[in-house]
Image (cartoon, rainbow, N blue to C red; front, top):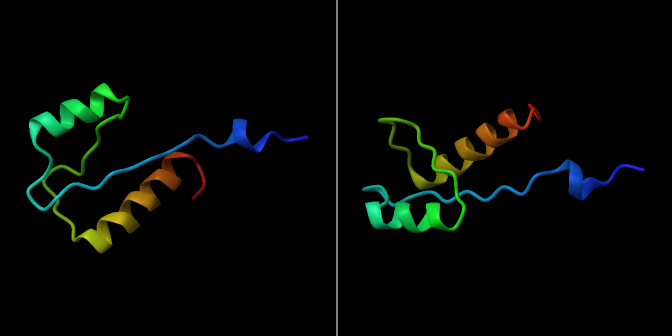
Length: 64
């Protein structure tokens, strides 16, 4: 029997504000176990960022 909880990692992603996260916000996230990732110089609208983040996570997990 497949243990689905063991097979699927927990993923939480947070999109930042238009100007990006402050250095203190990044430190706070790191202190709470978040891994920080970005898209370089790309700036996406909020509705687009969530779609792109979901697609990248699924790709990284080998789901697409």
